[in-house]
Each structure stands twice: as C-alpha cells, then as structure tokens.
Image 1 (cartoon, protein in one colour):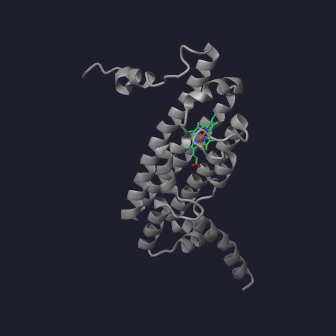
Image 2 (cartoon, protein in one colour):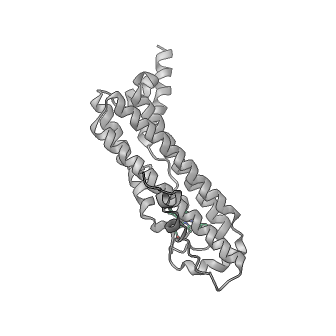
Image 3 (cartoon, rainbow, N blue to C red):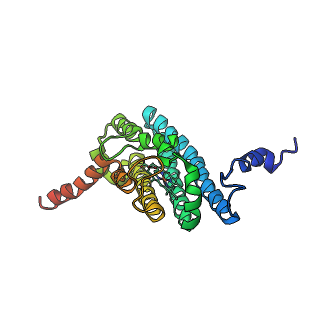
Length: 238
Ligand code: HEM
C-alpha cells in the first residue's frame, strides 16, 4: 500500500493554483477577492458541466444501443443525477448575486472579450438536450429505445408507470430540460442585475440575446403529455 494522501489523490495543489485574478497586485484586496469569487464560481460551473456531459453522453450510449430493464434503469438513474447537477449549477449562479457591483465594475474590464457564451462545454450540453425546435441526442436515443420496445413516445406518455423504465426515463428527461431552463432564467436575472442593459463582454446585446435563448427543451414529449388530457377526456365521454 502506498501512502496516498488526500492532496495527491485529488491533485489539490494543481486545482488551487488555477485561480489567478487579473487584478492581483493592482487593485484593493476587496476587488481581488471579488474577482477570485467570480473565477471560482465559473470554474465550479465548468467542473460540474464536465460531470453532467459525461453522464448524459453515457445515457445516450445506453439508450441508443439497449432497451432492456437494466439499460433503462441506468439511463433513468443517470438522468436524475443530471437533473440534480443542474440544481447545483443553478446555485452556482445564484451565489454570484453576492458579487458587489462596485467591485465587479472594477474588474470587468479585465475580462476583455471573454464570455460564458464561448463555453464549449455549455454548447455540448445544448447539443445533448436540444431546444424547443430541435431534438437533441438525448431525445433521439430515447425515441430509439422506445421504438425497440415497440412503443411510440405518445404510448409511453399514455401508459405512464405501466411503461416502466421508459416512463422513468421520460420523467427524468423533463427534470433535465426544466433544470437547464431554470439555470438560464437565473443566469438572466444575475446578468441583468449586474450589467442592466449593457452589452455582454462577448459582444451580444445581453438581455435580449439571453431571453431569446430561454426555451423549454423536449417539445414533442411535452406535447404528447398534453395529449393525455385529450385522450382521457375522449375516454370519459365515451
Ligand atoms: C456576474 C455574472 C455574470 C454575468 C454579468 C454574465 C453575463 C453574460 C452575458 C451578457 C452573456 C451573453 C453573451 C455575451 O455577450 O457575453 C452571457 C452568456 C453566458 N454566460 Fe454568463 N454571466 C455571468 C455569470 C455566468 C456564470 C457563473 C456562468 C457559468 C458558467 C455563465 C455562463 C454563461 C453561458 C453558458 C452563456 C451562454 C448562454 C446561452 O447561450 O444561452 N455566466 N453571460
């Protein structure tokens, strides 16, 4: 047995060397601290995004190739975890509301043209989840798994718990879609309280740009769920 330490296993020294405020040495301590806080929040988001994308990639692989009970349970389990990770990401945005505006004003010029809109991992997440107009890889894998079980998504919605694992996957997909939507709403709120109607550092209009991007993923799944009401009504009136 080697004497592996906590610091070695987690590479704590490397991790803690990665927060480098650009205002360091040129500004008040409170400003440097505020920039450090901003960096930690963003880096934490990127770390959690890494886990989230790996989990969702695994869901796509599992559902694209299998539709047995174990595959569906693993898919549902990973999707529920992804939904919870999105709650964590949501908190990472909310905590930045404690960034004092006067300190942000001082270090914002140091960001240059850097912007969250350039986050490659966030773009990867968007491809997996899809938008209100385009199905992402997750939904395609889900419909493939349902088809292999001889069911359409409409039937999965109508059957509810009787559809078993497919039902649990569908529910968990919505947790992920709604979690991403909630993150975007919180991010818009944060952005507007921090920069109002100013342009973003990435050169977009800011508020308008972000509002247009707040959409509810999995539109087809939502629509099939809505139609369950109509089917129930038709059934009850004979
Ligand atoms: C003071 C805090 C923040 C402000 C003022 C802010 C501001 C903005 C603005 C204005 C945009 C639009 C693009 C641009 O022109 O720059 C944007 C996009 C974005 N930001 Fe932030 N942001 C903040 C915190 C965060 C955090 C903590 C994250 C987490 C990683 C983040 C991730 C993103 C992402 C992923 C986008 C693209 C969103 C999309 O395309 O729907 N931002 N942000």
